[in-house]
Length: 168
Image (cartoon, rainbow, N blue to C red; front, top):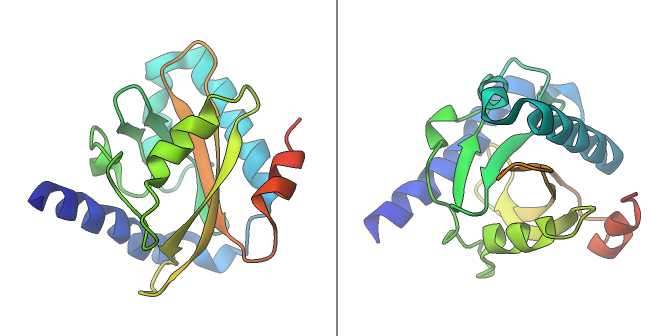
C-alpha cells in the first residue's frame, strides 16, 4: 500500500513540476496532441529503445504549451520515459486511480489496442491545483515496439466520442 501511495504522490508531483516548465505557453489543442503523439510514435518506431532518451528532457520538443508526450509500456505497466519526471521510468502505474475510482492507465492501455489509438477521460488535478479536473489523454501504440506514446490536456467542453472522430 505504501508503494502505491508513493507512486501516486510522484505522479501528482509531475503536475506541480509542470507548472514551472510550460504552463505559460498556452493551451494545446486536441489536434496538436494527436499530431505530436503520432510524431513521437514514428520516432520510436524507427529508433526503438534508443529513442527513449529524448523523452526524458523537459526542454525537448516533446514538451510544449501546457502538455508533454511521455512513453509507457503497457505490457509491463510501467513508464518507459517521462520528460518532466524522468525518475518515474520503470515505475508501475497500472494501479493508480483517479478520484472517481477509474484505473485510467488500464483504460489507456485498452485504448492503445485500437490501431488509431484513442482518448481516455479521467479526473486529475491541474498543475498547481488540488481539486481534480477533467483530463483527456490520447494514446497510441508504437508500431513494432512495446511502447505507447501519449499526451493529455484539460478540457471540459469536448466529448471523448468527438475526440475519437478526429483520429484518421
